[in-house]
Image 1 (cartoon, rainbow, N blue to C red):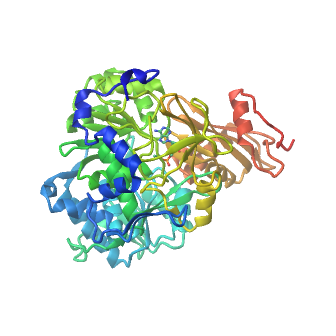
Image 2: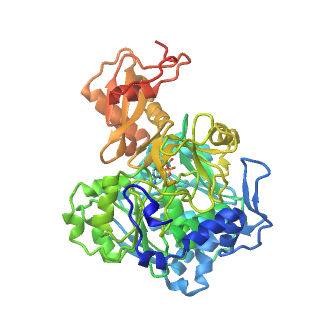
Image 3: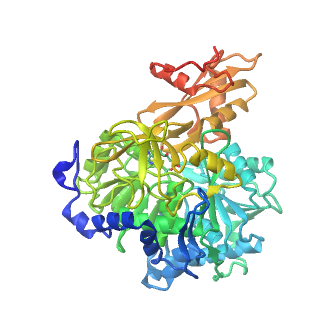
Length: 629
Ligand code: WTA
């Protein structure tokens, strides 16, 4: 790319950044586009396989792609055991700070030991290869330990974000048919305790499959322990059964690693399934090249392990790379808005990866808070979760990165498992654009008929090549997998996003075109919010839409029709908000609840959310020919 060819506001990477980078950019793009399979096979060879694969990519049964066919491996073995045979045995795998100031640091050796001990505990409870285990905790090291312990013995973990509540947890327990739930008594958030065990108790009253509940003591406030079902993690870990060594389950590359529920177009959240082999190679490679992790780095992904960003880039990606990862339990502004900047200085963080909503939230407090701290250790910055507005990008670049840190704006999804559109350290950046697809990937923007649109025209964002960390299916629902992602345009994976591409080939993601709302970067479905509202006795019908919000990106706005006999009041509206918080989680609480007499519907009875949205924004609602009345 020659410098004067690019249009618009462009930021060029410094010579030092480019020189240091693992990725010799042009070479990588060229290699990967010349031979995609060879590129990924070469990366896979950097990891440990008990038996090498015979075929890198099997696309004989599209869209059920297989990667590293015949290969035998185990992702947890690659995250821990491999490093324990080198100098990294003594390297810190994870530095953790609690919101209340508690500190812990675990070496790779300690991480492996704790994982083995806990894996033995799980085995003693009868957990076997293929069993589902649900994990529901705040941001504490035990969350990573529990995930890795499951992976070690071939159990399939399903992590439920600690910000979800009763019904969301129940639904996920039920759908995954989990035998074991691992939970914390509570989590610290903004100086208060989120009572996770209490929420779990209520969810368990609705869920039948769970036999054992293992409780990590984090906050130490009193919790109810049900005899015969609930056990303390620390007590189990002190039993002789919690032996320091635990043999590793040899997994087929295509064996399931985890389920992660995410919101989609209609109905209940769906369980996205990822595997040991391809997911491992994808997360390892993308993190190494994009954030350019080096041995001496301290890397901080400030997401939550309960979402895909945390799975791929707090737990698996960093550990596969033998990196030192930092994990912080609490809120960015507790007790003061300098908490993050203070920790960056204190721990000498080199790479910070967060979401636009967090950046905007911190930017509101002004430059004085970050300016009080020495942030010179930072070398790379990153963002994910929603489009970043150029103003927030510039602030992040200037005030946090002191104009020397490139910003990796990474576009990807729960389904993709790894970065898909992202800069590399050598890429000239444009604020608000994720730049280009990762080497070897072919992505496009198409119109209603699946034809590529012209530069700067908006269309559907699609993926045209397979990639190793791609979802393999929706757990227990292969038809939905095919319908949702591969049916709209044959041969193309439908992302659900709209985007445009500029004259330089840079991608600009606009947002979701389906019924997913991104609130503070968290992915929620209109259906989940609506069904929570309708589960309240006063509500007959409900509709939810997302409208732009300065900090959250989008905020949830809802319309409800009351059942006869109920009268709208401020008290009832507040009760409904609390009800959604209780059922789905605090992030899902609607910004507004408007009581209405009717909702715009199609003749087949589907709520036309786009009409509500257009009306709220004062826009033209467009084609109304399908409107019932
Ligand atoms: C949005 C999060 C613009 C997008 C990793 C996508 C983004 C959805 C970006 C997936 C970005 C994610 N720029 N939009 N850099 N990153 N998105 O599954 O709408 O929670 O489809 O995965 O987030 O959300 P999910």
